[in-house]
Length: 136
Image (cartoon, rainbow, N blue to C red; front, side):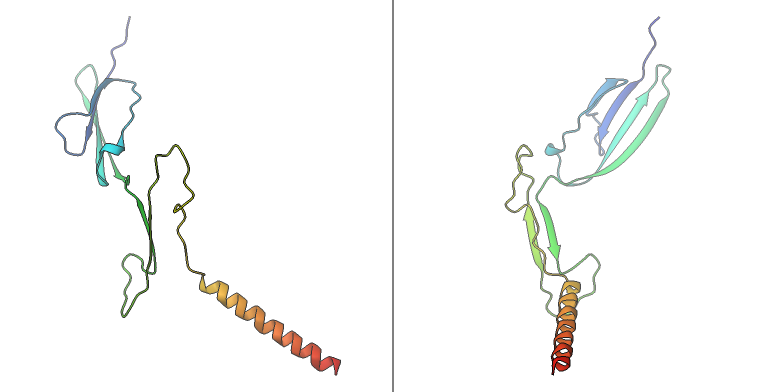
């Protein structure tokens, strides 16, 4: 005796027409390359052989466009005057080959690094002066 299976309907955002209708279990590939960047919702409705329905909503965000990295300002910062910014944008390419050029975001040298260098130089000069005064 063959067991009756549930039917699965897959909807994208508020579309009335399903992206697909399948008998469970199903493997499905969602091609986001055809979708606009931004927030979307995947709605999955399952219907068992008796007609009862189950719904699952999965919100997600698509980012197929080039990534944008920015240094110098963050979300919800309070700023005034002139704010220097470093902005980099890079695409993923065709994802079959790895592109080195432009794939890393340049960053300024962190302030902690400068503090460590100045501290080390100060200690070095102190040690040098102490050594010279002992030698005399």
